[in-house]
Image (tube, rainbow, N blue to C red; front, side, top):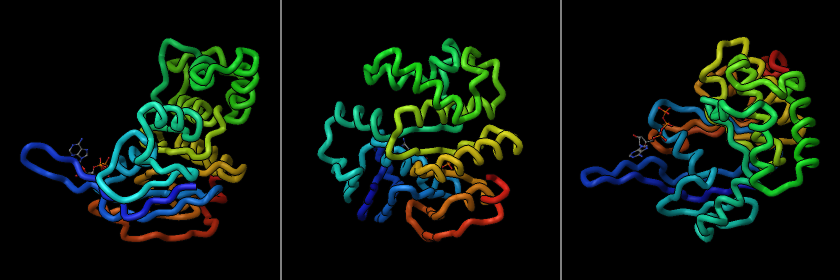
Length: 234
Ligand SMILES: Nc1ncnc2c1ncn2[C@@H]1O[C@H](COP(=O)(O)OP(=O)(O)OP(=O)(O)O)[C@@H](O)[C@H]1O
């Protein structure tokens, strides 16, 4: 589904060049759950931006569902993001003035889907994240964990090939964090492919593969079996 080959990415200003990603090789297969860990500044967010077609890279190859990222125009990138990639951020990024249902409906409206179809999909996905009773609430009327579950519902409502999840529990207490992780584990068991950045080793073990980044390089890739955490979380 995803293949990165010798991918390099740097940031340059007048005085300094920072190599943020160096010779990254990574393959992601359908149905995998990958966690990315590493110290601050090691390149995790940069990697997620590149994977999400939000940012360019200097050299190497990125294949996403058979498409070569370097060949894509800005417009094509935006369309692929909307259709193939779901994003979940640490800070939820919900629109405060819209209800839960309207927040979730946004990517479908952008795709030009019919109102009836949108309403059905929103209803289904709200049930999936166990928030059917909150569809008319506004984000400020929800707990942090519930807001993150709305953000996950918005990310999966288009049925994307891949979910990119950046520190999903970073703003949550452990009870809400555990709930969000349980939901991600459940989605993965139902077939979602997930790439997640986390600082939390307990949550990283919910993934089927752990990737460790240091100074822009992958220093370890580790396939993990179902762990105690996974059982606790499910
Ligand atoms: N826009 C930018 N301009 C210049 N340098 C940048 C820029 N964004 C990131 N960097 C540098 O690239 C490197 C990787 O940054 P990145 O944000 O990807 O790290 P990270 O692992 O996500 O860090 P954190 O865990 O603190 O969020 C760092 O050295 C950072 O200073």
